[in-house]
Length: 97
Image 1 (cartoon, rainbow, N blue to C red):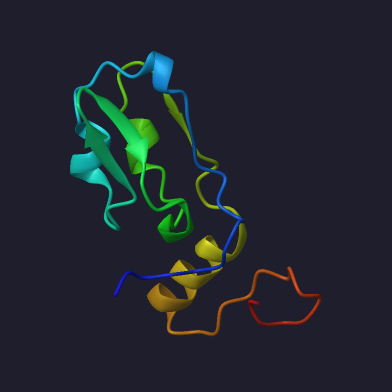
Image 2 (cartoon, rainbow, N blue to C red; image 1 turned 30 degrees about the vertical axis):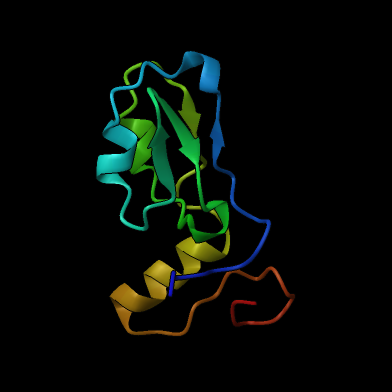
């Protein structure tokens, strides 16, 4: 079973035409969101993206972009690290959606 945050909210984008096929994004993604198909990276599971930014930071051709540290994924991670409840304010309340 793959980990999920929220559906259709990830900022992850991949421009396949810029991909050089190095596979670094696949190697560094902690949730296996990306995979190689032939010599091109592809987003395999966008909803599994926690927006950590590792893929974009390791892409030598800037084929990947993601706004790291935003939204509910960031709130969940901070909650885990601090032992507190996530708060992203996206539902208007004090807890994450």
